[in-house]
Length: 181
Image 1: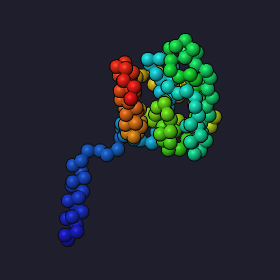
Image 2 (image 1 turned 60 degrees about the vertical axis):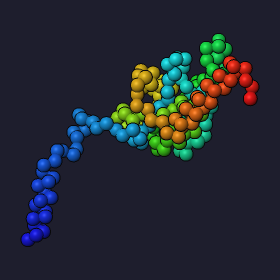
Image 3 (image 1 turned 180 degrees about the vertical axis):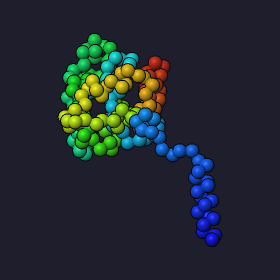
């Protein structure tokens, strides 16, 4: 008899709660910051060029070989408008092969790749597998259009970048003051 009351009390607690599920695709829950999503390239709005230089470290580190990169000389560098001597010419990611492991984000020395936790990355249903290959324009489109996207970059990379930034500022201050330590 006591078991019946336990079950009924649990049922009464559950009835009082709100719904757990949402009516996808009409309603979408916000994805967590660290959701396993697809990588996208980051556009540098100050220099009007991608952060990616085409070094190929991401493609070399990719365990499933879903990335292809080629680089070219940066015309803005010759004009003195950019620090990057080379810039990406072609960049392809096969989302059908990508296992969203985040290794490409971690090995990128220019912080040019980030995971974008939006539903658009997950809603990739296609009839032809070749349509899952994203080119440079597709990969840059989200960051080119919006500067406040919730890109996820690992904390270790953010800390390293901040440390390098502080180091550069100190170095520049030493050069200006004339101290050569």
